[in-house]
Image 1 (cartoon, one colour):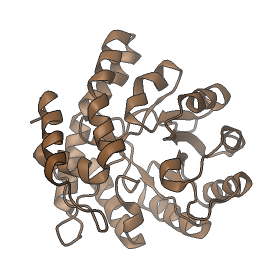
Image 2 (image 1 turned 90 degrees about the vertical axis):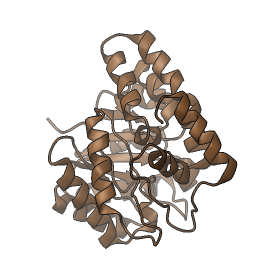
Image 3 (image 1 turned 30 degrees about the vertical axis):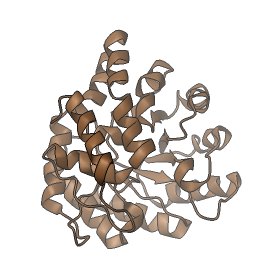
Image 4 (image 1 turned 180 degrees about the vertical axis):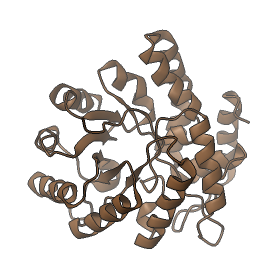
Length: 294
């Protein structure tokens, strides 16, 4: 039986120094924090990991460090998507050679390919390496929506095992669950939809907010799995304001600032992104205090 991801997997940040270099020691400390908080896997080199700002060699170094620190405690699914098929194939083969448990592949971006071209991109990447592939749909970054009909076709490709849908469209997520949920994992890609996705028959979440509140994101999943819907709903509502601040409001700099305030290794974002400043920092501090995190 092929591997199918489930539960809560943080698509985690990459801590950088003020000069933009990898803070490997900080990354390793964060890996321990997330795993000790109960997450069901890790996703390095995704959107929150600023992979688009890293070289091929840097991506490999990050993946290698995460694999080494995780040491088999949880699955590691590395982000390996790119704007072009050739680049995505190279990155996927690199990750497979390092020994990842799977890869998370974003839709091709910049030129907005057709759905047929997107299908061929994913098929070519999946056929290029013997590794489980999770599709990644994030229209707000790519300008392209991975349509459910295309996902249906891709679910027939042998090593496609899941989809992270960050469209924010619950109707689309429910359609994915209806059409392919019995064959591949359907994972929420936005932190305010962990419980609604599970309640609709989804399999888990790959969400930015789990960088900062991994234990609460895990609590939603575990309470739901145990049949305690009241606790799952209440915990989901507890993290809505923080999730909106981090993802809809301020993005990666806010996720990193939150981790720093908590004594973890958020680090600096890479330019052109800049650290969170001024009133936004005070608002974030208040949100973290309300959750008992600082």
